[in-house]
Image: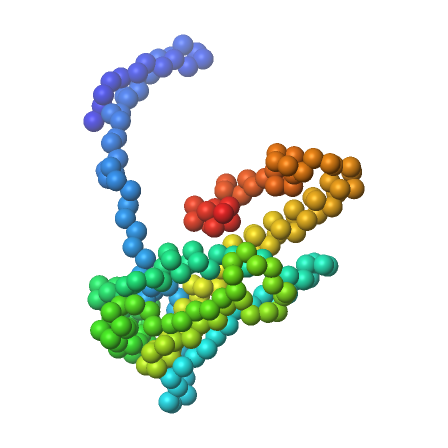
Length: 236
């Protein structure tokens, strides 16, 4: 459909008639698109079939998370931070529903070329029916914000239902994302320590805000990270 006609002229004085199209109205909702996380899908797909590979009679799997170290000289510790976000955002309360199990079953069947046996649907049904859709795991951790030597346990996880021995390491994929806020936090700490040393060496005597270290390190990371969630985690 044409709304009007424009006349344009080239360098030689030749005129042409160019129709102006009507503006297109995008078929967009006036509300943000809803997003529902599905914990049954929040893992590496190779872990989906791991329930088949545990020795017969396995009831509990106890796993731990640590920093393996750093090549930077003097960076011998980490500032632990970020676990609470992932627990409260993705794991608290009833996070398993029948709709999520059915969605996962359909997706995994397609992903594994029609092989329905790769997905442990019975295990997730057990969590829904016997645990009310709540994840039967226990997590222990050091206090967030604490500075811990490298190669030291930062948090542990174990299943509390013996029939869910496979769940501990299924959840690893999600929880190892704690490395990101922890790494940003650790980098920021070491940068502030470096700034502090050079402020002392150059004669600074006013340490109260806005003259202290806290106002000298600025974060412009929002624009460069992969998502709004990454920006929130790294900027906290």
